[in-house]
Length: 220
Image (cartoon, rainbow, N blue to C red; front, side, top):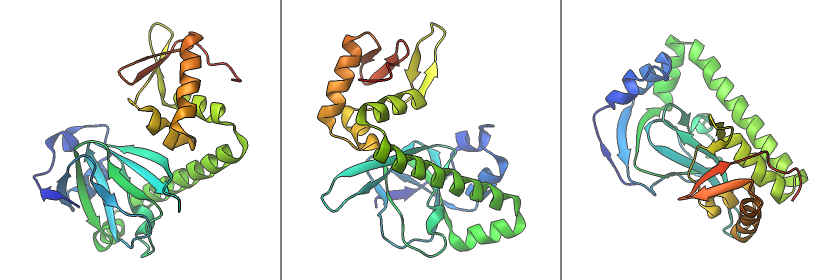
């Protein structure tokens, strides 16, 4: 894990979108900067560190015994990860940086001490665990009961923000391989579906930016 200690990010501490409790917790940690492509957490390793993302984005993913990867989520600045291993258990997934990232590293002892002083943060932590468990349950259900086309279109719709012209713009610039990893299929299948949607006038793609031009068809 390549990193260097740095001063806390001024932008993180002044951005009103971040909760005061999370800013206070981040101030207790060691702030470090990581290069793009750095693996911060290895699945099945033991760890007692909570990571608060102050700048950049990280990907949470898992690999099977054949080396196939599935993306479990993307975490952005103002959020945190690593909370599920603070019970002393093993990490449930791996985490890698998608771009240069700044994180505050909080030890288990520091987190427990903070919760002792600010018990309301325990509710935030519990809510985070519940939401991520629910998301994991939904992901398993989709893999079992929803076809590949349905999973791809559901991902696009979930990530898209409405635009003034009536279209929707997918927030993240994703490669076809990244889409495939998120929905659990091959890149070739993603390419076929995206080409068909573009040919039908449902989406447009430019420099990895995807626009949903109209409501996507229910079936492919």
